Image (cartoon, rainbow, N blue to C red; front, side, top):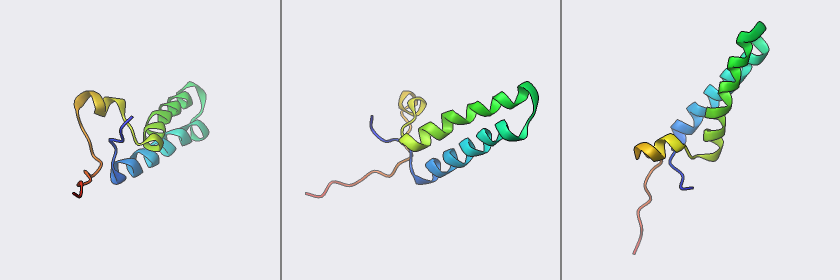
Length: 68
């Protein structure tokens, strides 16, 4: 797996994942289980790889120049 998530994208995914996971503690009833959706951005942010980005050909990580 080649990394395709950059620094800002990663930070936003981690924050969004944690916010969504916090819904498990804040909400009551069946609606609280929507917080498990937060596992997706959290996992992709930690792995720095997004399968959807791969399918769409998107890469937000900086390209390293090769020195000769």
